[in-house]
Image (cartoon, rainbow, N blue to C red; front, top):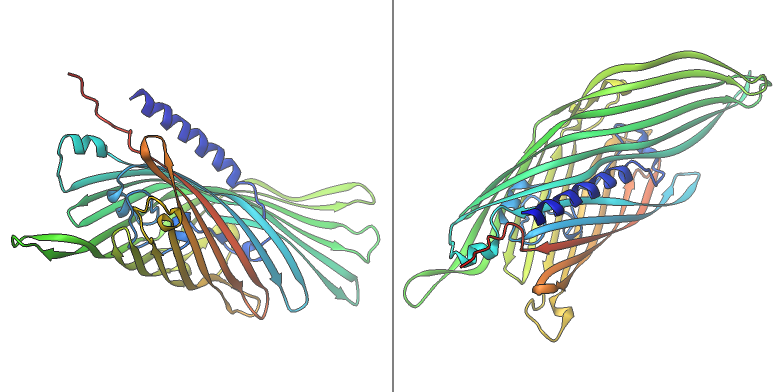
Length: 446
């Protein structure tokens, strides 16, 4: 048990460090000025390669964070950490900009409550299994610098500068229970984060004019949850003795969702006028304790996967979020739209037991997706996001023949609006999955 607590403390330290890293913006996304910013893909690298078909996905070695019912299928302890890098080509009707970004993507620890080795030694053939998970993931990210100009006959050129950084995160505790072919699960957690925004108005043509500056820091916090369930339709072959035996083929049905979620805000607002010629500063408004509330949208997802054990997975996923219910008193009357996303993906393993060809043991993944974003452009056209994905699951054999994975996913897509601002991007996620079957191992002494 002492080894368990040593590992547990290490995971908590790593998650704390990860939370600090999440707060460091490393990109320029003008649309992140709207709402809570750019939504972050919470799926891990193994699912990223299949276009995130998460509702019906479960795996004995990899955590599926977004449907907690999948935790009931975990066979070994799984510590997962991922990093993400992105290149984007931002293009408007008049300008073009190349943007690089990167960040820590997720940290997670999942484990079954009963050790698989102990179950084998005890000849435990129970149909019941319970898995647990704790994860730290970003929810939204904000990072932008936008400058526009305006010409007025009476006062000349005016510059408007908008800057923002920060984002929001989630720390989640998940539990999933499996009995025979049915599993259910729930994630509960805490939503938190801080968004800093700066607005400036500069009168370039007027001598000794004042520069208007509005600084706003908004802290968000609240409790979140989501529920999930999965059902396996297992195909069986009739044996010579008349009994039925699973043949490794099955269809998995999955559902996950949550209701509207309330959160609170604490804001610091500083509105001032600065004159650099006379070195003077006038404070117009200072409110360090502005309180407010908000609401995150209800979401749900449905999925289906056809699985041939140790050979292939082929699935579809549909999700929807009711962002028209979103509200945030700290940011005024922002109007967002409901969204949907449809995705299809596949995984193929040539020969999982090959001993002379590593390439045959690799998991090859592919997918495609199309969806909408809750935000709209300057012409009230809702933003869209579509693309294709490819991925690899590279098995790594650790001491005592424990199998872990390096999962790599590539995404090529386009986001935004053709009329206003669109981004053509390439994104890579690298995830490290460390599996260990020694947790909760029950030792026996004679």
